[in-house]
Amino acid sequence: MEKTFIMVKPDGVQRGLVGEVIKRFEAKGFKMRGLKLIQVSEELAGQHYAEHKERPFFPGLIAYITSAPVVAMCFEGKNVVAEARKMLGATNPADAAPGTIRGDFGQDIGRNIIHGSDSVESAETELAVYFDKAEILEYDYLPSKWLFE
Ligand code: DAT
Ligand code: MG
Image (cartoon, rainbow, N blue to C red; front, top):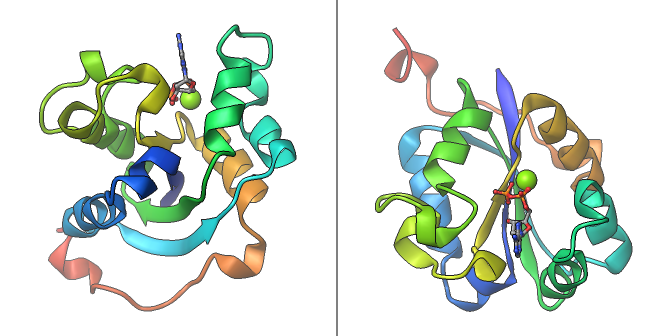
């Protein structure tokens, strides 16, 4: 079963949207495998967003992500990487459809509330950046017969 990395960014934490985000992933049936509140260091933020290093918005992105605590999460489920991206909505909240997290709660691309991995490969990389192996828990959850035929 696929896993993805989801992070409520500092603005989402400050605005009290952590519960709202978790509620949506829980209700969808995705299994929480990891969860923690952390202060992201410059080094960690640089590892996470290495692909954007040369972009003009990179310094602002690092300053934002390191400005206050974030909630890092791992969710597991069928096609969860792509499904979570749909739940997040477009990168720019101005383009994100109503019903998506960014569409419902955001206005500005630089304060878009939440991160979600964009591929199975980046999910693996990002989970390794943010979590120790022992922090990703395996346990019995909702019996799968209630989710899958
Ligand atoms: P996503 O977070 O949807 O995967 P991304 O990987 O392209 O989007 O960019 C990472 C973050 O960087 C994004 O959530 C917000 C910020 N960002 C992206 N493009 C930006 C831009 N043109 N101006 C300001 N911030 C931007
Ligand atoms: Mg991205």
